[in-house]
Length: 467
Ligand code: PFF
Image 1 (cartoon, rainbow, N blue to C red):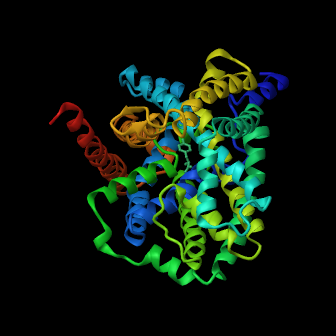
Image 2 (cartoon, rainbow, N blue to C red; image 1 turned 180 degrees about the vertical axis):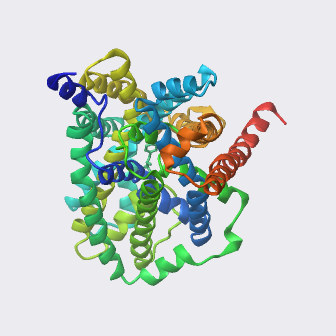
Image 3 (cartoon, rainbow, N blue to C red; image 1 turned 90 degrees about the vertical axis):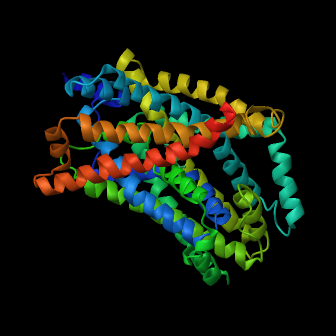
């Protein structure tokens, strides 16, 4: 390859490498840290009793999340291409059925579905940056903050406007390529995200509700646990770690050869968990300090928090900082949601990254209109049971497609990929360590997911079959 050819291939993403192991950690953490950590985690923890949920969630991250993430990244680095091509070449190499390529396709489809609604919700956070900073909530009461949110959701044009803004930004960044687009965004957004979180953390420490917030997160009240708690915690672990759809495989394809995958993945999971916990420790104390309730569901971020900020000194500034923080977190995740499909199309058709990014963005945007309408004109149109379009996509992607993908990825990496390749990728030389690893990643993790998978699906199947 001549110099100019390799530069142009590099700008397309083909054959690219992260500039360093550290940048991969930041990029993967950027993918993992998103709406799942700052919007979803606190409200799910709030609805499920706090401490015990947090403990179970941490257990899921350690026992299932980390082994599956290692499996995904190692397949990516071994295949060195998009998830679809990686699964195709590795299944050939393993002498396994070519049907495993479908796992790559499953990831592409899941990414589309998630990004379509992710772009809509992330758009809300952009709107709330503006609302908070412009002082729209200053001195407002609970009813008017609630009414502002309801009025926003009822207006499809407003939702589409912010969805479009967010999607355009995402597509512009990914179209620029791995180094000039993704890395450049990560280099800015991740340090800023940490800084904003730190500022808010200090604010929350002084809010007067910190002890109560801390106790809510870490006191183990076992009576709040039900079998559902485990399912929800596991689904959350998948979503928040960006597992099961080939994102980590796609990012893994660019990991330098000499990076130690075990320590790298543990750092990513630790960063993601740290940020979810920190978000809880920012949100709960502020909510408690204002005598509000934490179990408010999805409205925790968009109603309860703006209300809390409206009652605090400098609430506009800190409210604005908070929503800016979620927007940054959301964009680095949205970027990663496009990578499995984008890398495939670029490789397969030798197409221009910008052009592919634009087409993918337009399709996702169109699909996202279904989510926009789910909050207004289609809110009562149910697709299955009591799930409207958005509810259905959310359920299907998080509870079915991600666990299914994650389980199959771990199974393939552990039992079908030649053992030497896996050991080489992980730098395992001691057979005892190899066995311990295979039991954890090849048995505990997939079986754990299977149990969750079946118990999530069974009631749905049973009701559909009339059992
Ligand atoms: N991990 C992201 C979050 O917590 O918001 C969401 C996500 C990104 C899920 C990328 C899946 C994915 F592949």
